[in-house]
Amino acid sequence: MSFHNPVLVNKLFNEIPFKKDGIFFDGTAGGGGHLATMIKKSTSGTFYAFDVDKDALQHVALRLLSEGFEGDNPYVKKNITVELHKKNFKYAYELNKKFDVAILDLGISSYQIDKKAKGFSYKSGVNLDMRMDDTLNADAKTVLNVFNKASLINIFMKFAEENKQNSTSLANLIINCREKKRIESSDELNELISQIYGSKKSELQSGLKRIYQAIRITVNDELGSLDLFVHSANEIIASGGYLIVITFHSLEEKVLNNLVDSRNSFKLLGILTPDEDEINSNKRARSAKAHIYRNIK
Ligand SMILES: C[S@@+](CC[C@H](N)C(=O)[O-])C[C@H]1O[C@@H](n2cnc3c(N)ncnc32)[C@H](O)[C@@H]1O
Image: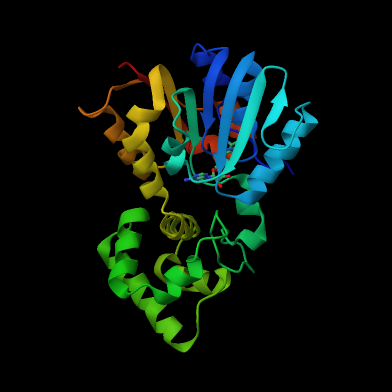
């Protein structure tokens, strides 16, 4: 199975007039698919690629070596240099660079969801973890066993977009359950979620997806990282440079809206979505939206 099948990759880079020489940033390197495509489009320049997951960086490093790059971070091939950083993209400003093209492909990779030990999946037998960065202190078990009732209700309402009644009922079920035994596995959590959404298969499926998403967003502070990046965008995207952000749900889109407020100089050039063929070959692409911004400062 491949590490990750990148979404919208061809459509995206055909859409923007790609500068062949420049400073490029991929804040979510993952399997390196978008990065590899950007590299192919350029003749020279420096690429900075971040990911918080050490497995992703290891995979990208091997991929670069297999594609003719040499060295050990930075990786060099002819006039192209690639630096890999195990770092959150919210710290991109620390590089002190102005990027000609920057991309964020938000959320998690197929590798992360498929690898049981990462603890993201609601499949049976998963030990809940959900940290993209395994040096974080708090994991999904912390959220489930330590967060108080008000915090649990808050994350279900905010990040699963669940109503107050269901959020409160689920928080109560979690608290009753953990008083007897710590909640550690997907099976234990799924049993509680099914008490709220259990009557119809489609509703259960949607409930599982949204509640797991809410916990994942909390553990990794996903929206906080995006918000910080958005607030530094003016400083880190070159004048005339492009910023591409691929979102998968409306909460991410809401944070992005801050990019085009009066304090910023970004213009939304367009939003790309996958066509039927891509959706048929890559289920994950279904909800992908690539927002293309240009810094018109
Ligand atoms: C959807 S995948 C990216 C796939 C990649 N574009 C490709 O072509 O293979 C998202 C990746 O971003 C990483 N990630 C998510 N949030 C991050 C953050 N705030 N900072 C750095 N990496 C992050 C995840 O660990 C994951 O590897």
